[in-house]
Image (cartoon, helix red, strand yellow):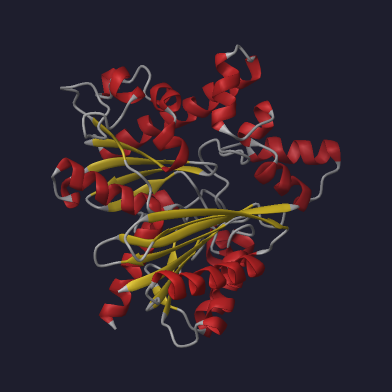
Length: 402
């Protein structure tokens, strides 16, 4: 089955046409800087003769709706010129499914209404996903469409990991609890790690680290998430590109009182002005690492705080799991920053974690993505993120079960 996947970010839109039976990409692309002065698109596809082709385009400011129109036109052109097959189903990534959605679901008006009601919990992500869903239902009215939720993978977390120590009516009346995010990525990384290890996922204790501009850790036992660093919203947990991660709420309230900030302004400070950006003026780990290498004190401190928080969560999750079989790095920073991986694994030999410096610098040279010291008790793996393939597979599984 050929599944067209849409992955909507706050300022980006990724798409991919996947043959979900074999995982083969027929075409894919990414439109970035949506809502900014200039937008950019990058398209890749497999030509009719089997050659990989690529094309970049620059546009004046696009929103998600206009970006979708460009994608439609591109797919129609490829169908005419390269015999690109038509999609048979559409899968959408939706960040927040609350406690209502425990798995992928077929999209209907009730599902759309519930996603809309959850938008205040993921204001940067659910609204653009809804915009894409609604437009796709108009453009492809004959195709089945599925919503795949980032929160679903974490829905089996035990109550002692989900609940906050706040008044009980917060939970009963407002559903205040920890939902977790990046579940599509964590689930894919866990299954890929099990495959690399040659062991059943149901027998493994794993920590997966999704490190990108957004970042989260997950403790996975016997194939299920038992804890994760993000909470009711994607703000809690690890230090991120522009998000604070864990912070004393009283400190935030103190600053709000001192500076006269309203709740919206305070939320913006924590979501868009904090994290690495707040510490050193940049949210790009590549830029920060380069500045750190050149002796920039703010960049050095930012990286140290970033890696320290990761190490704290690794240690905590080893305790939660009662041991560890593999530590898994995935997503842009996790896959590409040897410096971050090395710092995150520093001084953890007593927990069985020992990174091989040469393998870490050049993973894959020996055909493996394993970067631990030979003989170390804990395997350290790099898994290339593939959320779109995971969405395609869940979409196909949902349709096959109907």
